[in-house]
Amino acid sequence: MQPGTSGAGSVSRLELQIEIPGKGAILCELVRHLAPTTSRSILNNLPIQGRVHSFGDRFVYFETGLVIGSEKQRSQFIRGEMGLLVSNGSICIFLKDSRGQPMNPLGRITGSLELVESIRPGDTMVLKKPTA
Image (cartoon, rainbow, N blue to C red; front, top):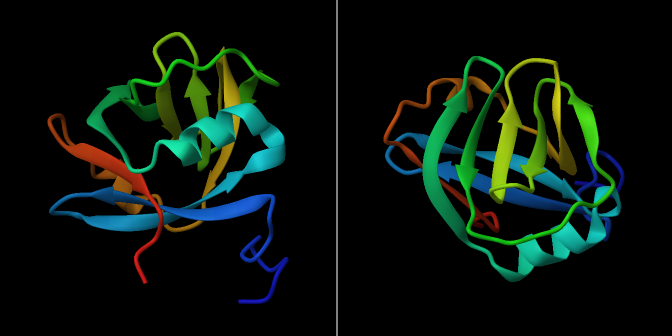
């Protein structure tokens, strides 16, 4: 893939993978300039795994155990974007355009959200570097 086509090959956009064991995996993009300190902390702690929860039909999230402060927060996200909820260190994936609690922006899902929408209580999610 050429640099700039979806950010692949760029130093500011890093391709990661979200795996739901037993169900599949999707690709996502961590955009460093949105929240550089947050991005660095996440990258230094990969793989990150947690049990999935949902916040109504607006987003799904999993707790990372990371303690990260507020950074370039915003309170409006669109479908497919990812944010970090600072209060409990959760990575959130938005299923619909939402306005709400401020979060550190992380990036976006680059694959289909179908897998994320199929998540059920008790599933786990793993954020990691993509497998070859």
